Image (tube, rainbow, N blue to C red):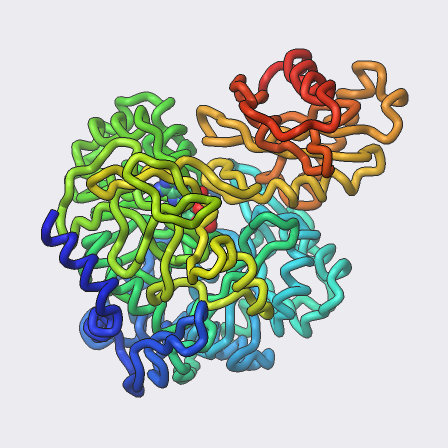
Length: 634
Ligand code: PRX
């Protein structure tokens, strides 16, 4: 372990020296003057004064050596379309898109909201934003109109880029009516909406504000748009994520620090080299998509594979066939996908030639031991679990095989990654936990390059949300519980806040509660996450009705439950849909009126709720028990 320990120690004790060396991995149009500005903690500014551009580093820089190498391989099992773009072709497409965006008035510092399915144009759009110095904010295509409206109002985009439709599992999802509704709801009215027409949507909505991309692309076919050289700390993107309150937070990323952190991670964690092929099966709407479908592989000169579809359509062998066909070297996905694949015919995995594959990376939710053992045995290749968050942008815990191939430990994503001063702390006292003692996973100041720089438009929220859990100490809270063994391996034990993780998707239970509360039948509601063998967790809702008598009959209740679930679909999107909605006449609360979500979750998982603070009315817990017993567990 000596090499790893020494490497990590140096990154913490001498961060300036460590990151000055790493910064050589990217192109700086103007060199930075200061590696790290710590004058305003907890804010940290990396590579101050340096000017660079993410698009230049991801694309332009490679043209000299790898113009004819594939940069992007696109496969959609939804539409049957497969396309390859060399670095030269990717460059041309990004320039067209940048020219179109510029013609619509987009300039440096403007926000561009991207509401797109997994299509190559999503990559062009994001990199075109980077080129222009515009700030992209990608909203996951599974989010419904009100969620989209909330993000429009927060980011105030100068442009929205969308498509006519997305597709999943053979079902077409019309996007334009969703955008239309979101625009009607939002206060902010972006001047333009650019539409990529895939000719998928059965009904063509033709609102006057819609501008179709294709004719403009033709018009700007030969365009060359110069890169805007941005100061390292200017924002590159905003990505919304859930937290304790119902209001999503816009995580802001910088430019230079992100590029350096990703480039370094490709060597030390992912062991990806220029010319390799990487397949990250995630979505561009999530942080894994931003970092490891788009920016990191391209910055490091790899070929990135972008996939639209599910892992089991046309059959459970599709991903393994992609590995064979495209000679994929690195694969990255979430444990949920593997749990789905594990239920498929095991012969499917053996049918493809997987000799090109070196390593499988997994992140986003706890990797359970049966799944980890199954896939490691089936593949006979290293499986590298890694732990991080939207906020950090790249892994905090992992076996860093490019530094030292430490032995994996089942159930643990590994040891702290260089750059992260990661400690486990007692929730009350803030003291460092002894090995084997449960604590909150925290990071010391400064966060390394690539981590969030602030909350969009709300510096105070950045400080109060993340840096205030331990008084008098400059500590960032991940809001995850963990336990660290004597060798430094950390095991994740779940969230300390009201965030749940459904199939690798991070959801705030408060957001789901707010959606349910908007239904007129609902007086009060509690949403909790409970363990699920396939999805990791699912949401369960408990509601108190305004007029319970109206729904006394079983049939009326069943109809109401369906209605409530539809409400969540419409407000947030189907990913946030609770597995069940149970009706009770009161919810367990403390005397001060605080909802006892953890006790409810314990009961739903068949566990003892443990020591409880004084409950307002003990009958309420019994009601939860009865509702679960009557309705069956989710
Ligand atoms: O609770 C942790 C869990 O997912 C949260 C972050 O989710 P998100 O912001 O969507 O970013 C995902 C980036 C990979 C964390 O706070 N989580 C993430 N990775 C792991 C994990 N839990 C256990 N093991 C992991 N490897």
